[in-house]
Image (cartoon, rainbow, N blue to C red; front, side, top):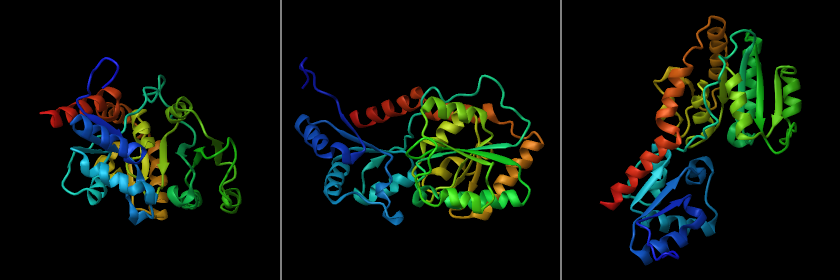
Length: 298
């Protein structure tokens, strides 16, 4: 109980490994339901991801003790079920900060196609080198584009060996700018000035950067991994879904976006932002969480 003698109606554990044992103990002591929400890739052994040995037992115990799992995607929910079969689930995505919104002024429709990539720049995960090769192929096929790359460990630095050399080898000098890490406000501003986001990951759950892009009305080119296809498949206004590791498909998508910009067809910003607003804002996600709480308190 807290200082006022109040007892909670439930325990909500976000990311099971962080406080698994404490959450289980308090839920048991108070006799209240435990709800676990997750967005972590550690559940995906097929992608060589795993918990540390000291974490896994606690994660399993928390998932099995829970009354409800709240994964950010159905794909992640299936992975969580391998640790704790039979527990009810409701898919609830991550929330997007309010700074990710439609630009106040319309995006410029002239000039080169403006592409954006935002990530950790970890090549085994985000497949940066594959993305660069696809960009180079699109350039040789006549695509007119520039790319801003946000992320990594230090402003203006490429922390992964081979990137600078590869950019030069592929003839991409002058087309790609690595600007280092940025605040959410700066990322939002970059999205509001771009024409499309590129994410060529080898694995994901439901990356926040996609939800943020859609919230600004920005379409994406993203690989069909994790829960990405659960939103992107069958919704061309949101962008193009690309097979994992398919550099030719990404090159084709870049060419298609270049042609769409030249013909003035990149015009679904409000529809895209409305889709995001209905699903990823604080109010939308909060309402879903409240509904989930009520389902275990009946």
